[in-house]
Length: 267
Image (cartoon, rainbow, N blue to C red; front, side, top):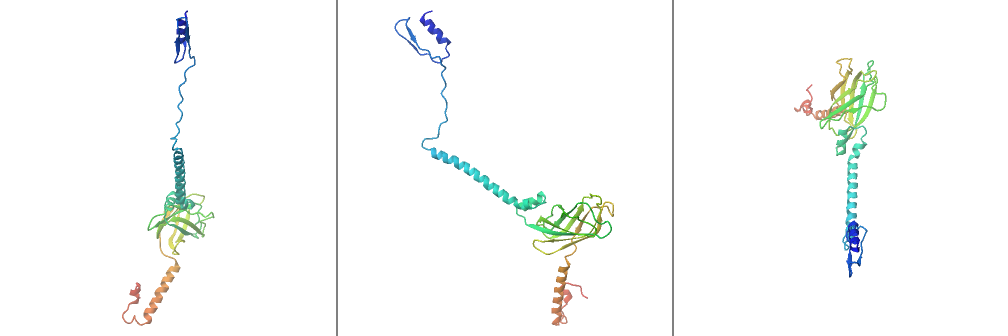
């Protein structure tokens, strides 16, 4: 095979993308060069930012990261601060925690429960109470102070925390009818807000909450009956003092009806 044929064979067998060659005088004298290495594609490197603004690019990148971190921190602090009252209200239901978390006034209530002195009046069941106010109604509250509660002739005192329900109107008292002796004979309940007033509310029951006694009901809704004796005595003393001042000047003889003025029935 001549030199030109060998060059042609090598040219077709090669994987090279380019085969530069040249010839000089005469067909027999062929000088050629063949690149047998595969030509590599140029690498695409990441273009750096504009050479005149490298510092501005870095500043913007860091500023974006810092703003994101700062906003996350601020939002976390605000959420924790708003939920703190609800998280500290131990034993509260979800609705009460939601109300406390969004700014409703908290009220501590002291509840005194009197169990009757009749035989087998106590209960082993779990007792719950709901407070009805003129603003809203509380959730069902478990009465438990880690003591042997609701025994015959015993007075049990509990403290509960609720959102502001306003003036207390009535209560709903019930138990779960569980335990070896679930039947309960309730005498009365006294409740007053410790946060802002000494006003007491009395709820007289004097009946059984038992599935095997009376009407078989284990719950009662009781309306407030009267305030504490101290308030009644204070009001009565004020009325008596006013009566004394009116009658001491002889105004009653001048046609002033003291009983009608004070809103009391005429004697």
